[in-house]
Length: 129
Ligand SMILES: N[C@@H](CCC(=O)N[C@@H](CS)C(=O)NCC(=O)O)C(=O)O
Image 1 (cartoon, helix red, strand yellow):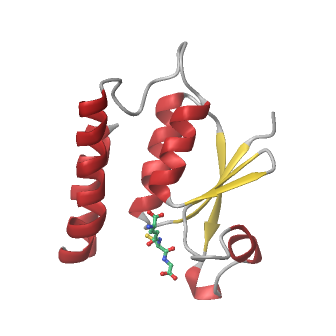
Image 2 (image 1 turned 120 degrees about the horizontal axis):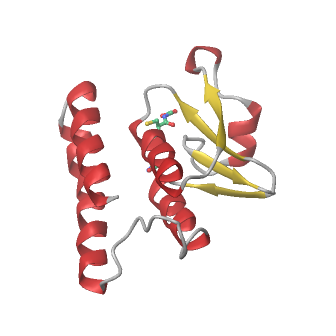
């Protein structure tokens, strides 16, 4: 299997949650780090033409964008056995996890300073994972 690649930027909290998820699953990956000062890379523009945002996951010929979509893809593709489940099994608990993940994206990231926001989203995402 080709190694997973994620397109990220160094300070992106949305990118970090993908890195944590892959680590929790025990999957190896390589990073393609955007340098915003140089503009967006051809790889990013080609891989996420709709939003042109990081993170993007490249998995053996398929491309997945949007961090929560990527998390669900990872959780559904690498499940069972020794793979750590990112979402709880119980439907209500899954709904709660999704609710707070959405809350973090919609509210916390918009209303707090970038550094504090990063800390809060880190805690929230990690709790959910
Ligand atoms: N809803 C997206 C948000 C992604 C996002 O905002 N990415 C930022 C970095 S944290 C980005 O790529 N910014 C570059 C830009 O705004 O042009 C997700 O969850 O993946």
